Length: 221
Ligand SMILES: O=C(O)COP(=O)(O)O
Ligand SMILES: [Mg+2]
View 1: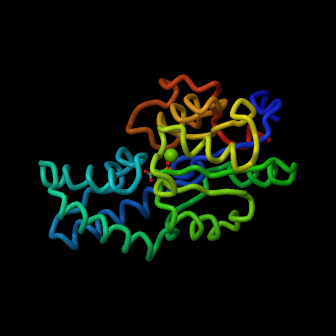
View 2 (view 1 turned 45 degrees about the vertical axis):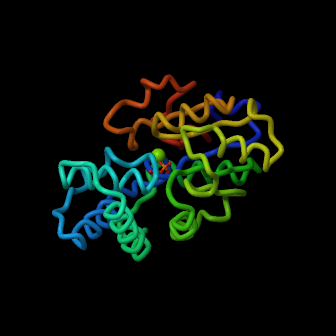
View 3 (view 1 turned 90 degrees about the horizontal axis):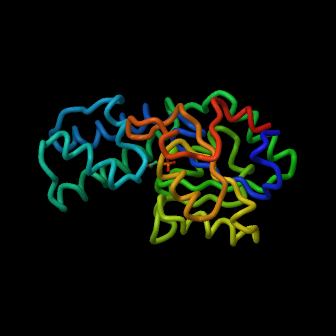
């Protein structure tokens, strides 16, 4: 067991970039939505740097890049709707679990550790993705970016999760790949653990000074 887990009574995981490498499917849906609007594809490498603040921000960043200008609200809304449509058709085609994720989730779950998921991804996509990997039953509560008025880096979803399980924030651990996870965790009073392999707008997540970092989540168990 990782030393940071000592005394921990609830572990909250981020989804994109922490448990799953979802950018191939996200980028395909972004590019399909842009194509519906007559715009050229942006590609996986750019989309990788735009993930982390939810689907509206993702589309805003993609449109600003494609247009070289801030999109108007109507165009933003219509391309976002097309993105939700395309992503909903294939959220799991090329999405993969990172190495060590299944071992970590199986091990923690088998040990009776309550697990939660806090992602900025829309709620509707969480279950299809987790079910695709047979992992939906591992999590007692999953919160998407549209589940509450606030999303990460606001601490509200983490505090909601801790209250749901009746665990004091100081006994909770937030595990994530981006500065939004570490900031939300710190502001909620959680311990924080980072993985370096995900999406953090092209910056090392270590710059956010998490309490610890692991190369693989297998190190948790
Ligand atoms: O949808 C996003 O922007 C990222 O989601 P995450 O919070 O699971 O990294
Ligand atoms: Mg993430």
